[in-house]
Image (cartoon, rainbow over all chains, first blue to last red; front, side, top):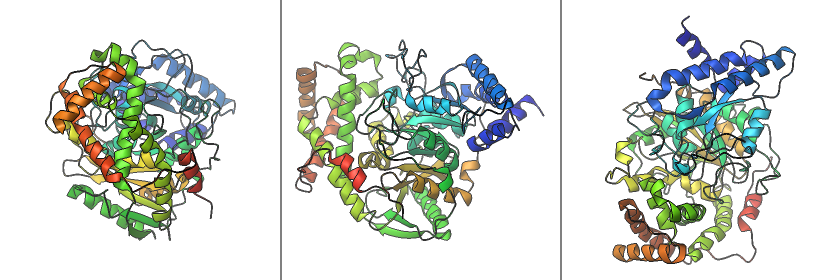
Length: 478
Length: 68
């Protein structure tokens, strides 16, 4: 076997397969780590998924983990598995750019809880991944580190803001990656790159050591190839954290154990309002076929209306814009030229939104969630929508900085279906469900009640048992 | 409306936050706030304020998944 073939054989394992192989002694952590680093070396110039890798430290850690395994000691369910994460998770002493010029000199003095938990479970952090500047665009453009390119078609968007996380997992560089999701930033790249990604219930995962964007809507979560991979990662990072008092004390169940493929009798809602407005016909067909798959497994399709959705969209846009503008006010005063054109423009509008609008948006979250609990989850167990209504757009067509006509409207349209879910605070997983006529991925998202992570992952896993969209991998032009 | 809102955004950002910015995108995003205003107008009367504070966190608990 050639070096490339050996590398591919290992990088094409799923995260759970790779970790099980290390545990069983079928492969070493050093071999997995070398394969991941080689995959970046071979393909990253094509898609620009990473910001910085640390091969020496990664291999040193892998060697240490292999030694531990040899003496029968495993740190946890990710023992010896290399991961890389969106470059907004603090690691003590390491650069953390947040995808920006402004944060280039930043060296955090502490480590994010999510990273700490993943490493305590035995994972190796091999580096940091590309992202939208300060996690604030849905496309994958980055004026400072270069745009991230979709591995299925490099002229197209990866989705954002967790662009490198989606692209690196799809390209088989890495087994899994943390992203973050404030308006869709995990699910959009998951959908556009053809991988699986979950945001939990608001407050489910600690945000300590994660770059803030919007206090009310930020979520930490994983992207990986399968729902099972995501279940393993999510169980490790979820749960209360004393360093983040806003994190929930709700117990974390064994999400992986819930993946039994049984969706018989499960009521699956399909919204009759809003989520399909102007949907592309190829996206709609893929979604309908996906629902047929779940129905054939015994799921019951129920059509229903999602209440207050117009208000949800208005309120959602205000929350993230005002909170983002607040966080960035000092830099916007002192060095606005160090932001990309589109981000400075987006933040700018936030300074003119009245406080009464912001408070209204915050205060109506509870009543809207209660209405959803009654009108939606009183009738169904989960509800599904396309993750994105349109086909994956090109980078050129959505380049606001280059003055592309309609690009600002496209930004809003891309995240229309995801942003609403963040406002409601629901757990949501995006699952690949096909390809469009140009060969770019299509995804759908499944939502459940608050803290129903196990259920949405169970539905996603059941779907993946009967489909192979998540197993397909792109061929990179290197 | 669009001219007005651009000017208002400029004034508000300068007066309240000391932020001045002039690029094409900032004008476009400022104009986009007109739709936000319309969204708030449409929402009027649909929902009322609650008497109790922290309603979202409470709602997460009230509506959460429970084992069957």
